[in-house]
Length: 415
Image: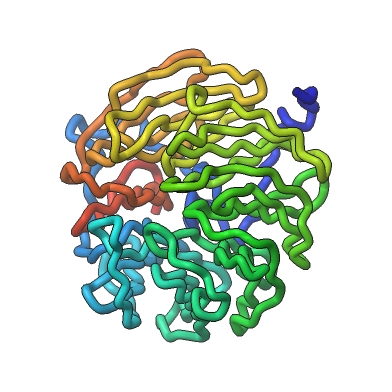
């Protein structure tokens, strides 16, 4: 394995912030830096024994998409039987600000839920959503009025995945980078945020359910995308490939977790007999170490970094129970494992972790690489076998979504 460089250990955010994002925003999947880490948040010292206070609840429709939050506005992307609905709620009260709906006929043959899957994206007065049928829409964030629309599945002849479209787009400057999944040199496409026009398209592979990330590695910008069978970095300015390596497996498999950038290394993981990989990407010829399923095989929950370690959920939501792990990918070492959990997702707030399980439990854990230390736990949502939605944390409020309700919990200090 290539030696680990000093820069790896520096506490430098590898990702590029969204336009005008600030502390307290959660304007995209996995938060301000798309890494599951809250910025500018402080948890309350303790919560009541029954769990955090519920400030409000709101009814929601179908869909696995978590919410995005910016400027005191919560964007919910959900489904009625015949439409996809984008709804803006007041973050403090849960009251509706606006709602827009668009026809949708998709029905999943693999899941009881028919979308949408992608977390909304908010920036510079616009809301972007990617629907389960591949409809990419830009809406005005003040009114919900549609500014432009692209049918990515039709425009690029992208085949339908197992669960429809489900990879949340990412911003870079004046463009959205989307894991479209076309074999016709359009696995990944960059669209203008202004009018939806195609800026560039590149690579040949079908899509995954992993969200792309933007990172700066050795001074260069990278758009890192996990496709169906590869991990690929593109120059986000023009689509030129900076590096690539195989990742994934043919057959009934899914890549769902977002890649994690740690200095000049990239960590990726998937379930379904795929396992994990640790890649030195300091050059255009990455050195890749396969770490296998025994190290980590996470179905869709993205590992969360803290210094030189990762906290991760190991296992599958649909098979058995899950484990929490603290791992050192550079050392290829598991530091501790705690078994017996429902599957779920992690958010890091300073030196603590919030673990929201699919069974509706919220578990507060110390981000300690020496041992598992639980601070508290409480049931905050009804137990459900479909609790895939990612939470969002903004100004001390944690937004958690169940099958039929969105709940706002007071977990930290804020407005």
